[in-house]
Length: 406
Image (cartoon, rainbow, N blue to C red):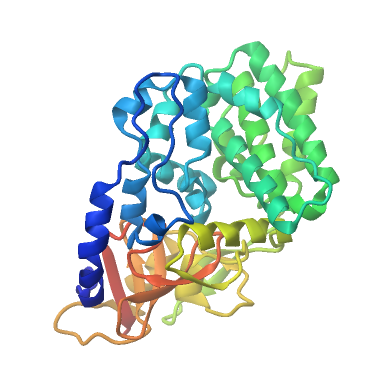
């Protein structure tokens, strides 16, 4: 059951913001295929700060279908890379799942993934990508550098894009990716282990496409998260081996050991829930980049803790709210808490009370109600711990259920 509406304050604001949003055009009308697309509403502006829900944000930066279809691919790539909500993908339990969720919301990405020359245009940008530190750069600059590389590598690593590359282009991609990997390794303070993951995912998927093997056997390539020791280096080594001898396949799959490792937590009623114990953290630049993203794009939410890969929303809401929490809980682990009777779903005529758990059933997210108002505290994937209005987050609030201890 969804949270009962208590929107007195929001109702007062809605008359103003609703009228404002109604007057906004999602983007500059494109009269010709070679006219760049610009977002009329952008983060950091008064218009953006007036948006009161995530859906209003999505609508304000939507690209009209006709515009997306008309844009030449180079300009479409520019528009997608500039899409203000693209890093929302980092707010989900899996980067790949997050990317697919963002794609489902944005017509520009949907159109790009259909273009037969998408890989060629993205490869042009990847060829000139500079991931090395700049003289005199600040921590914010380093964070921007990390985010720029993440965006490009994540889009280029999509199967629809890789399938558009010719043999020569895919070979070039492997060479460029290896060079990017070396440059990131040379700047470990900025990229760390987590920063090498998107490069390895791109390389591994490109290799699988070339050699025609199933990359889903590798958790790194499937989810974008390194849980096995040396998974990144194993993938990179397979690419090097392919370039040395392309006549045989070099499939990558997960080994037996772990870097982050599988472990178990228990519900109040004693049911076992599988989780991942996370053993390393984001770098300072990655944390800064993630913190800056939520500050700019979600100005009405309050960040209470820094971005972290150590724990996620389900772990925070159902297992532990401690800042020392290092467990990552994927769905359907959170379901176990109400399925075994540890928690009961709230519904009328129960009274509404503080600290109930909130499950966003429409978007695989969990939080904790704060007080008896409409605010929630939740961890946004690899982003920070946030205090926010219940429908002001990267997640769909179309269907929510609230739970209290049985």
